[in-house]
Image (cartoon, rainbow, N blue to C red):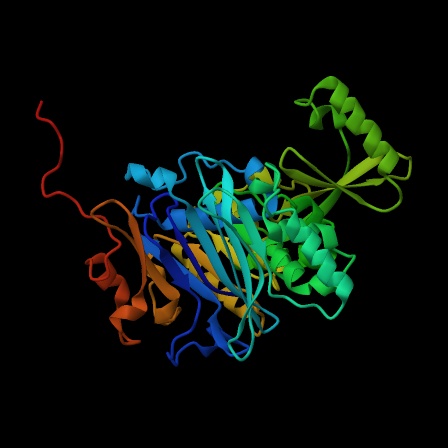
Length: 455
């Protein structure tokens, strides 16, 4: 679970900004709190702010840092990621730090990146013991003359593991290659030892926490709908949920369709398309094969005649003879299909981030979705952080005060993050009206006159 996240010098975040999931002493909505070790952590946070205030940049900072961790800087754009309204920030590092709890063990992981050189300047992973003692699993930094230095305080019971750690870290030391300057130690070691050595449990656990993280933007599309349609339990669950959301959908049906390779691969060069066809034909057995292509996921298997078929999700609106496809649905219904499967497939996931959770949804649907999330997540260590404009969700019958956050643009156009908790509002306060009146900041401020030229 996430304890807290901080960043600085990333897009509109000039100085360090933090969001915390540590629960306060508020007594209401105790089901929104999970006890992990010595921590009491919140299951959700909603972030409000005016347009161009910077709230989406919070989700982008998480997504950017996750991509750097898992893919390395070679596969991530660093162009204009610094705070651009202060020229000197271009040469300063951007920093990202996570404090997380995994199986009641607390970790602090972070890194600093030089955008212009596209290099990792520093990286650290620290384990916090129950007695608050901190053990550096690894620490990496570049000194003032450009030498990469690495160290560890970990002492493994097995000497082979100690030697292995020394070898892994040595690759990031003084003789570090240009390619490793762009990669994280966390990812490098986790991939080397995954499935081979249980002695590096801390590193593997933290790495998998980032792998399991889910980040959804307004343009994100859930790519595994055909895969889910092949699962009876998931299909039944989605059908019930979509019906309860008053979408008009009565049932979700899985249809077997023969794979039209020529249509599916029409935008792929001919030689490459032929190779893909051959590879699929050779790979398919009686067991289903999952194929991801053009941002879609297909679950393929051989039919009775040896032809290749796949599952396709169809939607019954009350007429069995005329079924709807996903593309036929409204923007709001498709948005629900993008959100609900994530909850089903990732009930035990570390954390889900959603930018503009209310996009294309009626306010009652968004509220219902959050209620569904809390119901599904009872006693489950999942967390959700989302940005929104929907002030109807500013309801203390739905949320705790410490689950509500604001992002406000400052005089220098940088963004500041802060919690409603600092205002110490009573549980019966109508905070939606107070917010729109500007009591908490994070709302648009207009000029008195309309800036329209006379004509």
